[in-house]
Amino acid sequence: DVVMTQSPDSLAVSLGERATINCKSSQSVLYNSNNKNYLAWYQQKPGQPPKLLIYWASTRESGVPDRFSGSGSATDFTLTISSLQAEDVAVYYCQQYYGTPYSFGQGTKLEIK
Amino acid sequence: EVQLEESGGGLVQPGGSLKLSCAVSGFTFSGSAMHWIRQAPGKGLEWVGRIRSEAKNYATAYAASVKDRFTISRDDSKNTTYLQMNSLQSEDTAVYYCTKVATGTTASGFWGQGTLVTVSS
Image (tube, rainbow over all chains, first blue to last red; front, side, top):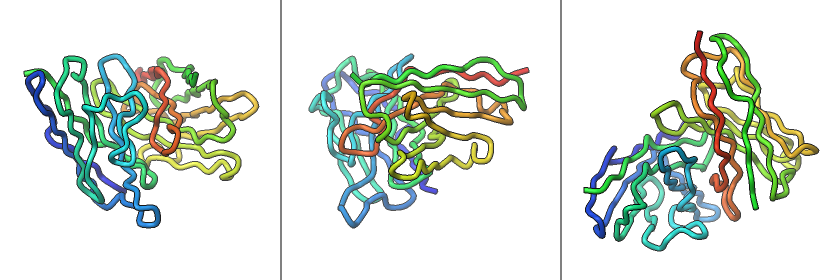
């Protein structure tokens, strides 16, 4: 099974500054036949279900602000928020959907410094 | 508008059973794979399992933690997917979400609000 590990577990960033969250998979989630990374990022605010932000490692879901971006390939991935806004306070999860059982990282709690 | 609504949660004793339902609308349910994902109180997300469409033989897959205890099914005529949970343990206490994949990917783009299952004596 693929194990997803995020770092850091928590992060405090000043408003307007960059926030970076990392995600590492125990094996490659790059499917060679279509050159796609089966990696997604979700945002979860208190009392709400998660919201899909990024899929295929770098494709923003419709309606997601362009300050959110995803990068990386194979086993190492990054979610970047270019200029932190107050509404970005949340827990962020990466997920591999390369193969079952799908798996999530443990989450990264993002707060305002 | 895509909508998913889970129901059936509640308090159950250890060793007991419970069946969750997820009623959907706003998309062609019969052609969509459906997933169940859970979240224990104050904890992270755990993928529970999924069921594919009829075209893919209603294939199911499960997390190791629930395999042989949980069963996912669907009734395309009712636009509903189900999660039958047997031999429940305290560690199964969680909010259970059903999800549908987003357009153009197999990541979970649409989520219900979840239903809380509490396993306790």
